[in-house]
Image 1 (cartoon, rainbow, N blue to C red):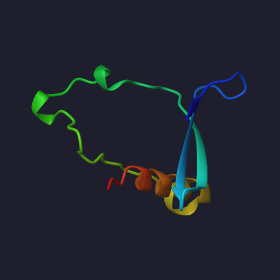
Image 2: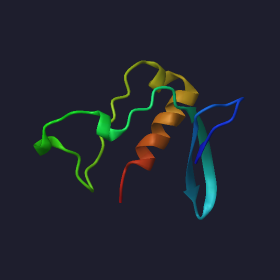
Image 3: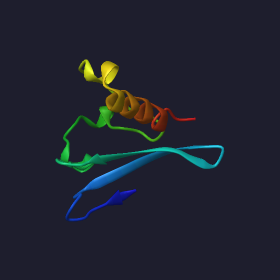
Length: 82
């Protein structure tokens, strides 16, 4: 869910469901959005439907800070695929 308000501009809310109930929600701010069309790349390396994204969680915070660990787990779960 995307939202924008004066108090919380450019927000993105990600959530997970378990047994058709909301399991958890994470709210993140988007600061420097770039569309896929703004990137230049060779056509043979173009993203394809069904391809898995690559995530690199760099930094100690993703292993020690609870909020960052939770964000990492949620993103990996969301983009895991079928």
